[in-house]
Length: 84
Image 1 (cartoon, rainbow, N blue to C red):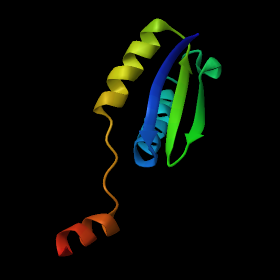
Image 2 (cartoon, rainbow, N blue to C red; image 1 turned 180 degrees about the vertical axis):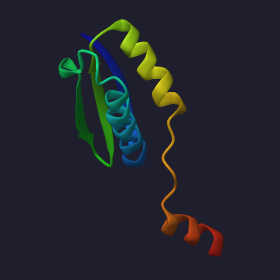
Image 3 (cartoon, rainbow, N blue to C red; image 1 turned 180 degrees about the horizontal axis):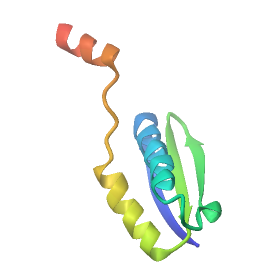
């Protein structure tokens, strides 16, 4: 089992990583993904995430995937920023 630890991250960053994790599993559904897991520990207004994957190669791929993964800014937030 191979682990990806985020350290302490904001709630928004935790959401981005969590979404990236599930999208990554969708892309690898033909592999041994049932051993994959994600644990989220609250840390005040932040969170700490530990992701376990089935191989060193999967871990390396996930690190590249999460580094490139973006979540669009919600429309309401974008509208508030342009009117400020």
